[in-house]
Image 1 (cartoon, rainbow, N blue to C red):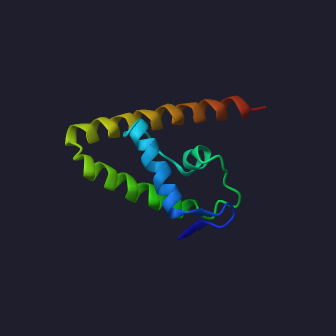
Image 2: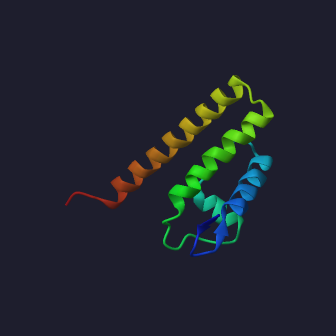
Image 3: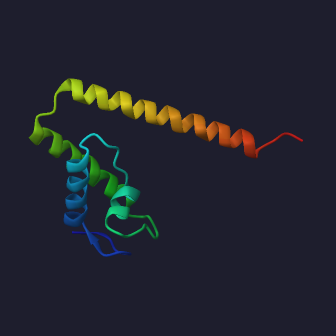
Length: 103
């Protein structure tokens, strides 16, 4: 099925790239931009990104179901994800404060 009509990318190609990324690090955060970058493409209209997110979630769930990931691994991943989110949140706040100075 054609997912991205701007770049002519199918769901099979997206799934293959996701599995390759998961084979490198099965607990990394995968986003549409990372998938497109791995394919040497970039989002143009980005209308396909919601579908790509759905494919990422489904493929990642299937990948971990096949590997029989333990609850401890999932908890560790969630804590890493939360830490990543907090670090980026702090960086966003600092960036806003530097750009937006009161007169």
